[in-house]
Image 1 (cartoon, rainbow, N blue to C red):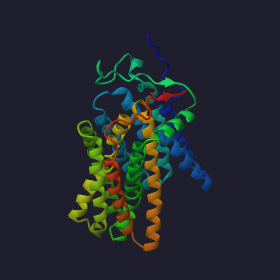
Image 2 (cartoon, rainbow, N blue to C red):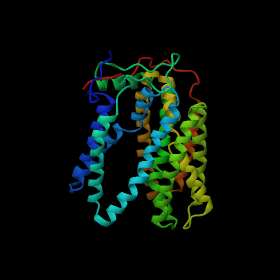
Image 3 (cartoon, rainbow, N blue to C red):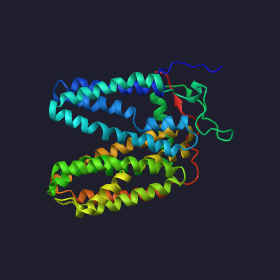
Image 4 (cartoon, rainbow, N blue to C red):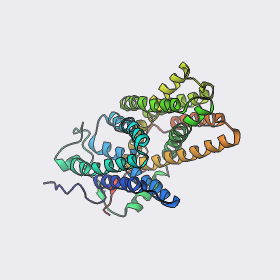
Length: 365
């Protein structure tokens, strides 16, 4: 009989998610009482980075890889879009509380919400379907449920070893390069600088912020649709399409910014929302296809490149604005980089890469 150890086994995705969620109140709660600058960096920078990063898109890749054999793309799209849905639900509430009660109250509300999630994760989430005597969705004799991970070694060593082996393949660098540009052109550039850029052209801040919120609304539809398409179309071609269209749209954005919202700007907002994180399902699928059981861990490293790209773009666009007094060059550079990402995606090999054949490895702490 298969044992059913506690869901909180050290090193398991369930315990990791509970641990990561527990970090969020640490930066939200204490940060609301007021600290010096270095403490703000530590709480809002380091802790939120570790906590939020630990339950980010790479965690979705792990769960999908274990619990689903078919419809992986669709499920990845739905789970990824859930993040945007949460923003749509909670950001207006947080903004309202900050307006009527000051910034400390919404910080404490977010901290309380994170704490509430811990018992829900421990009670409802399991590491593997076999723990409940189940098979993964869509499992069959031809495509069985993925085996439970082998647990051995040191966590840091395993992660770095996976990076070292994956980095020896061209596929990894093509995926990481494209996803770094994805982060640069979404979170780094548009997410950070669209509102001030629109304001530079005379658009009221509230109007610009509302347009950015609409990006999140259409992001839900676009990401789920991308997941559905990933199950039916070669993910490489989806990435080529997404990046190419995104690049062209960024190149025309400087001509669309104006004091009033014209129909052409509505077209940009709708398209950019649909394309915002539509790249995630095909990227996850390619990691799983090329790296097998370690696909989720490899995607974690690919996702790290996304965040690095976002950080570089956020800083670089600000420097361009300070030097030139406008963002036009930043939009053009980002558009050109997106076209480069389309080329990188096209160059991803069609056949599987036998670079990391061993199954994903978990380790106890």
